[in-house]
Image (cartoon, helix red, strand yellow):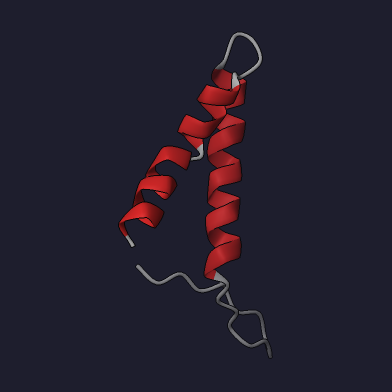
Length: 61
């Protein structure tokens, strides 16, 4: 799915896929933190941010 920032009058569409991905991950981290009873462990943060998946993808490249 291609995401494009909404256009205002006289503006140019902006597509920054890296920024959108970072915003999405930050949102997921905020949701996880708000649902936790205590501070998130480093392992929990890595799980929310899909660090293991990123490492697996990088190793397979």
